[in-house]
Image (cartoon, rainbow, N blue to C red; front, side, top):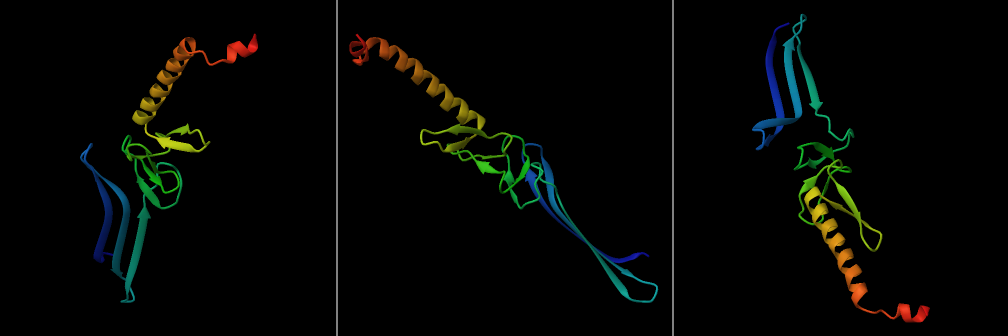
Amino acid sequence: MKPLRRKNKRQVTYDPDTGQNREWKLEQTKHTRADNGSVDTDEIVRTSFKDCGCDGKIGGICYVCGAVSCISCHGRCNKCQKPICLQHSNFLEKKDGEKERLCGTCYDVITRKRGWAKVGRFFLSLIVDTGEKSNEK
């Protein structure tokens, strides 16, 4: 039967890097006239999959790869606050045992600083006598 009226509703997000719209949700409604004279309504609602594979609510879009992830998998870098997916998250353990989520850039900066601090402590230990050697004698 030929449709009397169609209605499409799309929820999209514009990606400025690629210049394309990314579709999150599509709703289609189609009204047709049946053989007995009644008007039938067919509704189709499609939600897009999340790149993380979960089926929860959408948490955000990763700034690195543009992946859509759910609320539980999506997060922000603790230093620069950029949105990142679980795949591009680096976790660094703090002194209190808590894990900190970082993007790749901030993770590299912090690990580089920690490496230089270890080198500095080593050379400082050669110069400064802590008194531990005198106790061993």
